[in-house]
Image (cartoon, rainbow, N blue to C red):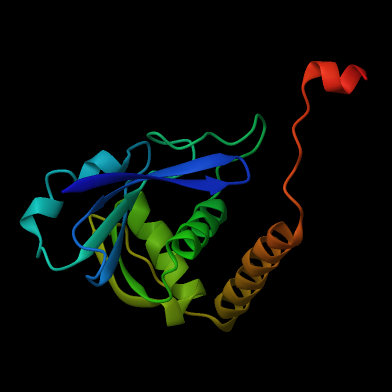
Length: 169
């Protein structure tokens, strides 16, 4: 059984597909660059069915909203998207199944938020190594940045939309 999800983000929404039972252990599936959640349509039916799989479309991919004009697509932005998606799903701990670029994003998320990731499964992903203390400091800084942005967004009142007539009044 497949269901479609639409999760609100400041620039629009993140689209996702889900398979399995909500009671199953959660697995977030991350697609490759210039791909989308449909990448997992043939794979998920072959995997154990006692898990809850959610394949998200990264921003600007598949059915997810594109970023605004002039906003770049950075690795760190995709890591932030994962944090937003799992917050919306109310997942505290989950596994990641990442294909290609999705594996790089998933590995970066796992290093940035290790307490949230149960297992990391990489499919056809490039080698991902972290060695130095400098890299640890960098990840800590990025984590604080993501958490701060999400806190600021949560504390703000929703923006109001006005019609042209209301603006002219």
